[in-house]
Image (cartoon, rainbow, N blue to C red; front, side, top):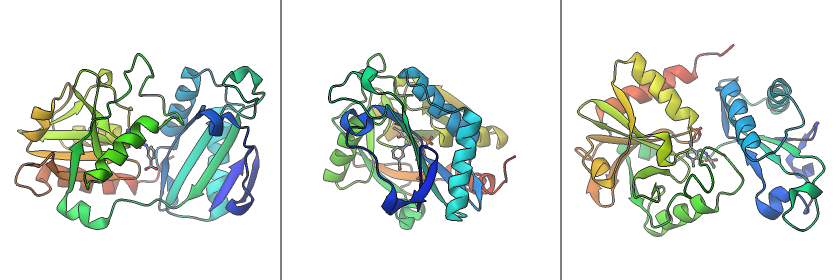
Length: 286
Ligand code: PXG
């Protein structure tokens, strides 16, 4: 594992940040999660773009260009020699006074961690996962836009804890109107009568890069798809359901709130998408 902090690459044991960093004190900052597959950083440009869009939305000016950020990420990956792994770029508001006012922070801190990723247990990909709807709802998008991938994950962490208490690994989060938004760290999609449906952006989901990839793949496989509003009824009555995320990739879901989805096994459309995804991540990008 190697860590880049403000221009220096070091071992994780030497990687230290100040206790006065507002990323730590207030969760004031943004981050990304990116995969390395067979030496190739998957969708690097898209992730860096999303990082800069998150930063812009919170008035955080990252002290390097997007090209410099991409180069710093690739240099840190090269320093590890890892051919497969996970990259966590983080930009915090930086070191400041005790007090939430960011104007005391002179310079944002740029941190890039390259290490391994812990995926969901392998058997869930074969059998499918059971998930539950939890009481904690997604923060309304007019309070905090869910597209901002910020260091404030408490909302999602509460949902994850509630899922854990129910004996599940992922939680469906509804928005303030009761429509399905997404899971605590994954997007959700369903298949019904051959059509792929995902919650539309205004229902309060992060614009996931894995789900964008799935939509591209669905297009190539002639699987019709739509972004819409989904209720719990819709997902209970789906033929298939799956989660997407940088860590999870595509995870079949076979039980939701005690309802068996389809015939209780990962479905054929999910299987086709998973096979296409595996092929897609092995393609070297320019
Ligand atoms: N929704 C939320 C709320 C997320 O945090 C996704 C969807 C999927 O997006 P991508 O772009 O990854 O397809 C995420 C993913 C982790 C981890 O290390 C991942 C995320 C957040 C926190 C931790 O597993 N983001």
